[in-house]
Length: 395
Image (cartoon, rainbow, N blue to C red; front, side, top):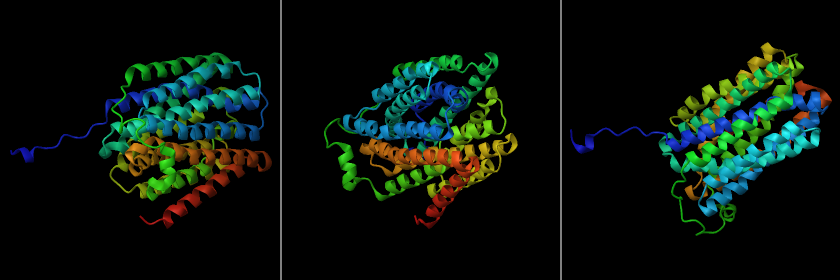
């Protein structure tokens, strides 16, 4: 056999992606132990209205996504990703005790705000780091793997929360204290387990990247991805409303975390194979296919909060998340210049953050004025609009 005929070795997902996936897993266990109970804690223990829940969730998630702009820009400018991610994960871990000490809505808002700033700081540098170390041939699979491991944490956390609620007779605060531990472990794993790769360009040798992006160096294909991500966020408001919908349907307080367990099991199982599929087929086609389950989920959840109907809706919601979230990250990485990837992820998440704020506030207001059904019907309408825009777009 000649040298030219030697078979090529398959491209592997780098070890750094695996480690970052396990960092996400541990932090999600910590966060979801709290977030799976937080909407009910606010409404039952603190007496918060659905509109206030929507405002808090909208501000929190929008803060995280908007903060990604600045961390992404800085990571491009200095040419470093890891220590910004450490700062963000560290902030997330340090805010967890605030939830356990909360005596009013103001405490929860402050804790969520600071926690989501931490998420915002870590998100864009982490995703840019994955793009930096991964071969384009397996980029969809790499983002799908990271998302899958992250989502394992997103259902393990609620399972732990549920078990501890049953064990400790619905003691919300005790569960929140336990959540501090996996958060600290995530930070330690990131500090000692991830090595910063070579910078994609010499640090500080060019203009501040946000100005370059503003001058139009981002291609039109990238801006289309930004618009698509924002539209889907409008259609998919905060998961707090999923928890409230099933609790409204009669599920006991201790079992409320099952909502996120079910959704995230489906999400986790589907994220890697669907991410891998994205490496072999049209991104536009897969994105359109991923919107259909969201429409079905919204209609099922609008119809009833009873476990049978809501459970089916949660399964479809998880399928939608698995099909679209890793795909959108891969699309950002593929369409943005390598030296501006942090900025690209930041701007993408800025648009999504603003959409999340609008979506969650509107969902909460519709819930309080017209009932839960109106919130989910509105989500279905936005999802159909997003699907229509994709159908009109020509590759």
